[in-house]
Image (tube, rainbow, N blue to C red; front, side, top):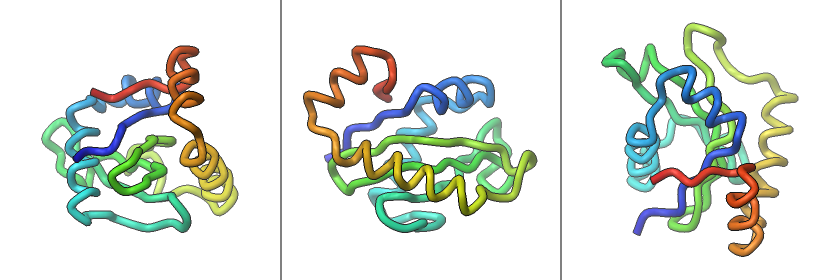
Length: 123
């Protein structure tokens, strides 16, 4: 069973600008569920490469996400490989704390954040 897939508002805005589709995100989650993870950053935080526009993963995008197996995935941050090499230690710490917060949400609270537009469901 696929986990519930979500993205925060800044991720959704950046994903649209970069041409990252929901279908590509769903495919990335399938790969994660199959054990194909590019980097485990500690706690719930993972890094996953996603290819776009036929460029393949090595020249594509990097996503940072919070993941709890078979439960939920929240995409937190996306950047192009051409734009930067990696996130800083301070960014990683902040994203880890945000991911921990999202993973600790009750279903009711998560649904409320979706209703407010803070989180968006990926279908």
